[in-house]
Image (cartoon, rainbow, N blue to C red):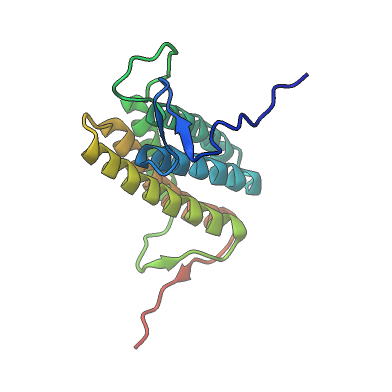
Length: 186
């Protein structure tokens, strides 16, 4: 028989961090890794909408890194945990930068602000970008409350939002969709 998905332990509004510490489901640490999980789900949705093999492989790699980040954020920083959680590495950030640069080489210079839209994949990439920015703000707030912080996580999530912005533009180009330029009202 399959294991039941529900445990009923969270019915009173509390959950456990990795390490066993019970916290409120409204705790900022839960918001941080919950937002990373939300981002991961939307990146999965984006991946389902595109056909470019390289971009799809890159998004799968990013999903793996986000799972690593979520696992790290789900740990009680004051407790030693028995399980081995993979580490984020500086090379993960360098990979994002390399991908951003490669896509930017193929894109026209951006001469105005652009609005999300034009194709569902482009809009979904922008949704991913905004969720990524929210995750970054929450992680930075968490770090300010409970040092030592997670500078590599903050750096990765910051770079990921840049990647997602450029990816939205790149997907639009691959799809032959004109960018929706923002024109200020006069």
